[in-house]
Length: 396
Image 1 (cartoon, rainbow, N blue to C red):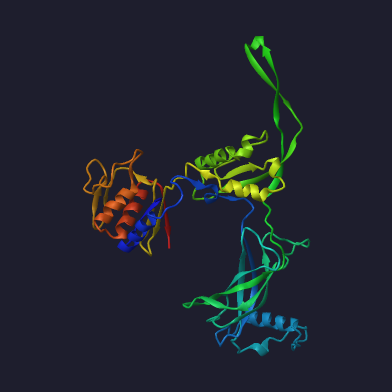
Image 2 (image 1 turned 30 degrees about the horizontal axis):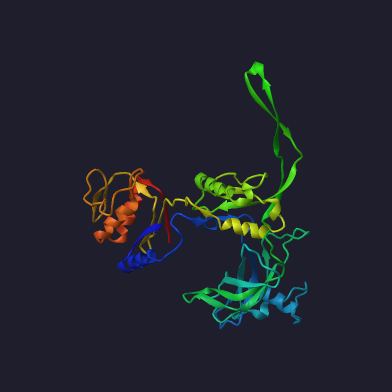
């Protein structure tokens, strides 16, 4: 198990049961669990729309809603009364509250989608509507994403419409339209790119007596065009060690062992540049799939403590340790030094490494039936004092 959790007896029982479930051999995880292919990012589409059919819960006196509704009706062929300047008279809408102006957003997954595909869209009121319950989103044009037309204007990428379902009954001004957003263009996320690669060849060796050694002279050959893609380490695993481990694992893949071309290279803590061998140039998808399935034998270490104060859940990574220190809380006084009122060795010998594993402290507190708040305060105190080897992340 890769983390410890403190909350209630039932939760601990659930975790204990999860530990018994057979899975992948310890220490071996596929590359796809720690890295993603660059270029496979999601795209967010956005626009403004009108929701109608509300039972008096829409915008009561919002001019923007009236103007948008007037333009939509005019575009549908309904002849609107106009003033001397040619603008639609929106005064005839005043006093109605069956419509609301809303923001509409949708997300296209990083894998991309084809024209005509449908995704869920979200609808949020930004006027004075009380509820979108029972409303119908009229056709709204969405833009955004990576596409910009030749004119510099954002083209219409999707059309959203349909009946609204509330996300939360207690938050009635936000909702979703399931499969309500239809794409008007293809979203194809390219993940490969071409760079020049200049191989170097050891052409000959010259012995230079006056310098007292062997001098190797390299002769450059013609540059080649090489197809690459990049792997990006996920933030929670990013680091020099992980990047190096991924690159070294890739180098042991058979196509690279038989290749005289460039090798996978860790460019920094998050990026591995991966060349695609000539044999796979016409089938890069299959090649990337094979690489992502390769297993890392030295899995990335998790030196993170995640605290959810609202639920009382604390998740502790295996590698989180702390230096010997005396800690006092409202209910407990703990000396994790030479003498320990809480026996941190009770769960077996301490593994080698700096300090004490934090999960030992969690286990000791659990034996004393300490509330989660006690562990939370101790962890925060250790971190603030500089005694904790790990990152503390607090979430709502």
